[in-house]
Image (cartoon, rainbow, N blue to C red; front, top):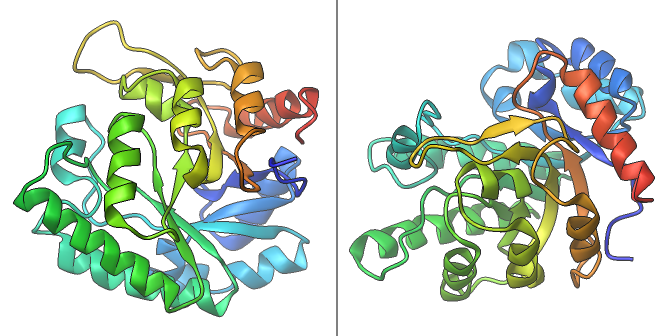
Length: 276
C-alpha cells in the first residue's frame, strides 16, 4: 500500500514547544511516535535546540522529515504572503539561501532524507521572474542533494496544474510535493482530491490538515480540526493510496487552542481509515 505503514508523524511546530524536553512531552501526549521537525530553530538557536535529536531518539520518537522556514514569511494576508513567501523575494533570498545551507547540513548529519518548505507563488507564465525563481529552487535542490536529502514544495499557493507544470519545467526528479489538502482550500486553489491525481507522481509526503473555504474572495479560509472541514477524507486517503510512491503522513495543526487534542483526533480519524 503506498501510504507508509510507518507511524503517522506530527509537525513539531504545531505543538509550540519551547525546548526539546517539552517537545517530547507534547509528542507523547498526542500519541504520535514520529515528528516532522522544524529545523530552523536547531540551526539558528542551538543554545535551546541542539539536544533535540538526542532527546527525541531517547524517547523513541522518529524524525520522519524536516521543515525549512524561509526568511521573512508574513502570513497576515494573502497579499503579504504573496509578497514575502518562499524564495521569491530578492531582499530575503541571500538569507534564505544561507539558512537552507545550514539546515541541509543538519539534515544530512542526522539522516533526515526529506525537507519541505514553501517555494513561494510560482508564476504560471514564462518570463524573467519565473526563470529567477526556478534557478533558486534548483540551487536549493542541489544543496540538499549534496547532503543526501531531497526537497518537497508545499501545495496551496497555486493550482495543481501550475505546480505540476513547474515541476516538469524544473526537470529535477528529486524535487517532490508535500501535499497539504487544507492549503488548497485555504488559498482557494481547487479540489484536493482532484489535485492528488494531477500531482501523484511527485507526492513525497502528506500534511493531514483540514479547512473551510472563505466566503470572501481574496481572504484566507479557516483551518479547522481534521474531520470538521471540507476535506473528504475517505476520498482523499483513497486517492493518496493510489500514489505510485510510498507516502508518509504528518498531522499539522496551525490554529486552535487545543493542539494536542486536535492532533489526537486527527490520528484517531486516520486509524478509523486503517492508515494509523
